[in-house]
Amino acid sequence: MAKGRLVVVGTGLITPAHLSLEAKSYIESCEVMHYLMTDALAEPFLKELSSKNKNSICKDLGDFYFKGKNRLESYNMMVDEILADVRAGKSVCAVFYGHPGVFVYPSHKSITIAKSEGHEAKMLPAISAEDCLVADLGMDPGTLGCQNYEATQLLFYQHQVNVCAPLILWQVGVVGDVTMSTELVPAKKGVDMLKDKLFNWYPQTHEVILYEAATLPLMPPRIDVKTIAGLKEEDINIITTLIIPALSKPALDDSFCKKWGVQIN
Ligand SMILES: C[S@@+](CC[C@H](N)C(=O)[O-])C[C@H]1O[C@@H](n2cnc3c(N)ncnc32)[C@H](O)[C@@H]1O
Picture 1 (cartoon, rainbow, N blue to C red):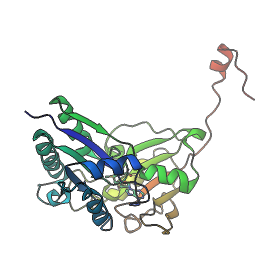
Picture 2 (cartoon, rainbow, N blue to C red; picture 1 turned 120 degrees about the vertical axis):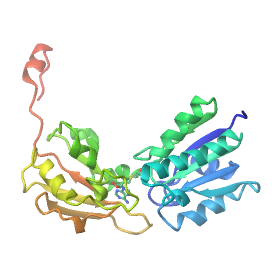
Picture 3 (cartoon, helix red, strand yellow; picture 1 turned 90 degrees about the vertical axis):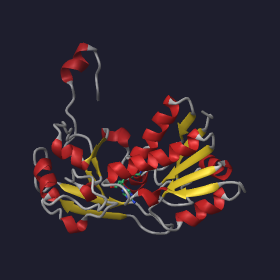
C-alpha cells in the first residue's frame, strides 16, 4: 500500500481570522482537502486556498452528514472517505471548524487508523470555543481550575463535579439525546434532566452563562446570564456552550500544608 500523509487542521471559530499560518500552508499544498464546515463563508475561502495547488481537489465531508442512520455512522463514513485518499498515497488535509481535536470524532479516528496502517498523520492545534470563552468572559483556568464535560455524558454517568472550579458543558443543544440523531435537538425533557442533575451540586438560583462565541468578524459574542432553574430549551442553540461558574472557593488543605511545613497567606 502506498504511504500517504494526513494533516488535520482547524479553522478556529472565525474564518479566516483564526486560521494559523501553519494550517494555511498545509491547505495550500495538499493534494486533497476534505472539509467539514458550519459556516458557509468558510467554504469558498478554503477552496480558494486549496486551489494554490493546481492539482488539488476538495471534498465536502458534509455530504455524508445525512447519509448515515445517525451521527456516528455519518462520522465513520467521513473517516472512510478521508482514509481512502490517504491509502491512495495522497497528501491529505482534513479541515474542521474550531480546534479539530475538541469534540470532533472523525479527526481523532482518522489519525489513529492512518498511523496504525503506517501512514504519516498528525493534528495541528487551533482556536476552540473554549479559547474564545476564556477571552470573552475573562475566565482564566489558572485561577480556580476548570472542568469540561459533554452535557449528555454528565447526565448519564457518575461524574464528580467540583463546585469550587468552573464547569464548562459542551453540546447542551443536544443534551440527553442518546440516539445520536442528525437532527441535532435536545432529548425530550433533556433540559429538565440537565437541571435535575445540576441541582445535585448547585442551588436553583445559581447563575450560569449561555455562551456563543462570535463566528463573524465584528459580531459580539452571546453572553446571557440565567439561573439554573430559569434555563429553557428555547434559549439553547446548537452552538451554545453552558458555563457554570464556581459556587465557592476551595478550602485550604490545612493538614497537608502542616505536614509539608507550608504556610499560605
Ligand atoms: C462538535 S463540538 C465542536 C467544537 C469545536 N471543535 C471547537 O473547537 O470549539 C460542538 C460544540 O462546540 C461548542 N461550540 C461550537 N461553536 C460554538 C460557538 N460559536 N460558541 C460557543 N460554543 C460553541 C458547543 O458546545 C457545541 O455544542
